Image (tube, rainbow, N blue to C red; front, side):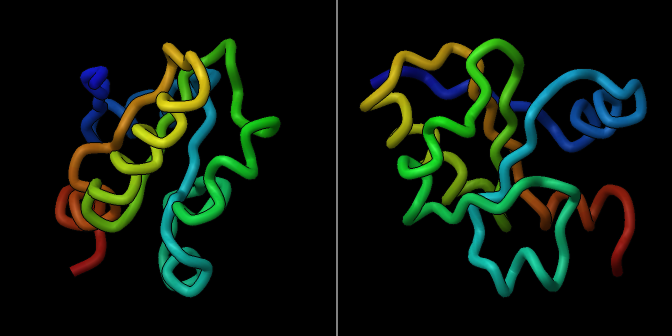
Length: 104
């Protein structure tokens, strides 16, 4: 099994602040996305492979969820079917984002 690449919330914030070119995907459920998100497009884990045509091939794609587990599973599902080299899991997900940057 291929080792998943990861990115920290600090690294992601730097990419955002620098307006870097990347795609951000939220693999949580719609109700979770509605209550708090960091700007990602919602592709729930159960539907991730249905969105294959919408996932960028040429720039970094960062997937996130609440704690980093569902996004990890989403990456594994994508890698089983498609030869992506540009997928990154957000370590700690939105919980790490909240702990690091904002909501208490």
